[in-house]
Amino acid sequence: AIGADGITYEIMLNAYSKNGDVATVEELYKDYRKRGNPYTSYALCARMKARISQKQYGLAYRLYKHAREEGAVGLNHVNVCNLVLLTLLKDGDYNEVLNVVEDMRRNRVVPNDYTKQLLALLGKAGAERVSQELSRTQAF
Image 1 (cartoon, one colour):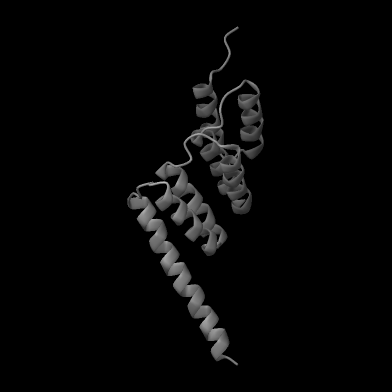
Image 2: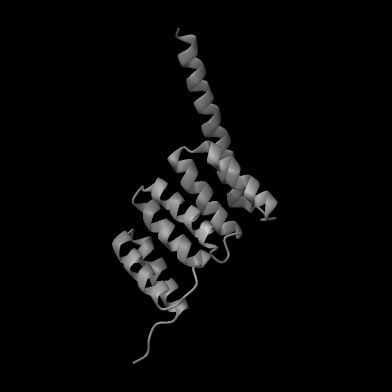
């Protein structure tokens, strides 16, 4: 019998993540790792995308933090950073966004156009948040 290799698993992880099938993604991931495949940025992104599609932003970010602690391969790629930024923006965790941007700078990850769009959203969301806080303060 021919078994699936790491690339095949990553393709399957990605396909199920696009459908938001968290349970299948996690089962595939466990099997992927059990077969000795390294924790890659591709596998991480598939797991995160499944969580994001289910609006489980905090869980998606925790996957990233855990992958970083485990020493996963390829985390200093702009696409991983963008997915993490998107997760944090959707979760409203603006302070952590700044930490990710600092990590990008420290690891010499070159931002792309999508990174810049996400950071523009951060600026807009942050400005709206400050405006809301000011309006509450002025109400007193």
